[in-house]
Image (cartoon, rainbow, N blue to C red; front, side):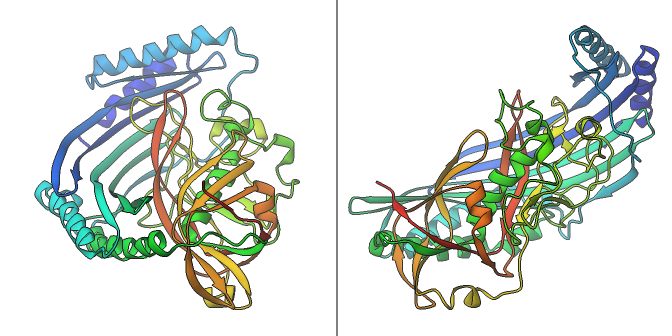
Length: 479
């Protein structure tokens, strides 16, 4: 990152001279390209770069933020002065002064290993990958038609250098690759839609590891069978087994979001939503049974939400949101940690230099067990296996939720049998975590872009888990 560190140190000094108790200067450089293909036609190519400095200060018990893309000394100093002015303007209306928890901030430099440089993936090759995926998919279908496939690929590099007035200095470089394959299948009067995503941090080698075209074709052939042969779900209560993709989405939405400390305190209520969790419930409230352990871990190598230090220079580590059914540890930055009488667990990060660092998820998953999938279903007389989802929703407090299955099958006498079309599952957060009766060892992850904040910030995340067996429940059908 071609920015003199002394420039950030001068920004720190200027903020302190103006009366700030705390100053943080973060230079962030996000660059890369994306391509979009509809069927086998190229419809868009874009290259972009977002590079600048974000400044945060605490002055008179108030937090101020400003940013600039003017990377001269004059430009950065003006941003510091603007952040101080904003903090002072708000100080008179603060009910309680902003304070940060005491932390041992890091001095570190790290980068994600690229066995083959990600930027070596040329535009032409990226376009060809997407076109080949469409051609292989459309040629493989036997009965269903695929009127459209909308594919995109994004290469992004994120470089940061963060300096704080408390001595933190962290520099990082994280290359990420993301691919989205959006398909629509049509058979007689029935339609089905699927977006298959691939994402991770690393180099050009990810393309080979994912085998995108083969993975998409294999899944579309299964979905064609669902569309053509799928039956309605049984009317009686049945055992349910959820695939890791569905489980991952559930834990992201019903454990990750409600355990963000700023949501718990109400900051996000008018922005991204509320939480059923209240501060006095931490460590006491039992939301599930012994299988309900949800972990949040930004340090997983190769993950889409990877980082080792957050944007406050606090070292990242695994966080246990739910531990054997008990609300255990919210996601904290230094401000919320102080309010909770705790320590930050390194959950503060920003989308780009223009964005304020806020509490964010990274890689969220349900802890796996030791069973094989076959053992999970072997004694089920009648059930449904919902491997993936087509649509979903959850209420503002993250309690009532609904999922429509995509690739789904009847389980009959311990074996996967005929396909099921559009099963609908509705339950509460408490019911889900309290009715897990088994988890297997097949931990898998799926990428996404998590939205939060005002102005909205989207950051890369993984969500996942094992296959999970639930108690009997009624299953609806999509009308």
